[in-house]
Image: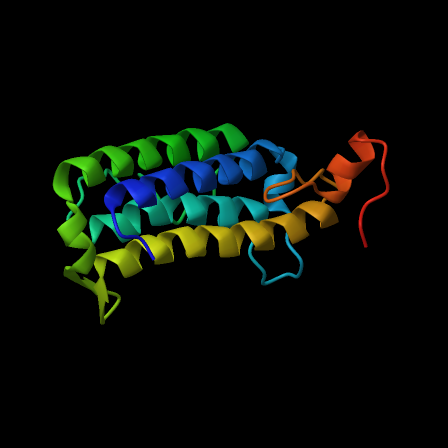
Length: 166
């Protein structure tokens, strides 16, 4: 639970870096990868994470220009990265300008429910982590190297010349 805007921003910076590591490991060709015919693609998941920053936080009154077409899957990894960085920066700046620590206890109408500001921020972080995890499975299936996020990945252990932990 966050007790201040600054606590969230410190956490967001770390999680944003983790998300960018995942995005940067993608290739344009891998964006179409999915597990099954009706499943989400890597591109969709990356775009969904990106769009949610603006979509969710704009519901709290923050000034964020949402994606020009959130339903269209991106054609390049660079498009995902640049839009994610833009939306993250806009969210961070708007949060600093419009929210105070007291806003964490304010009620917001979120998806037909009432959430406290702190719940919105926690949900934004957890949503991103959830979909990053889904992306790593698709990345393995697309034969991409998965970067270590909270510790070394299997690929990282190989770079260290050590066997991966089982």
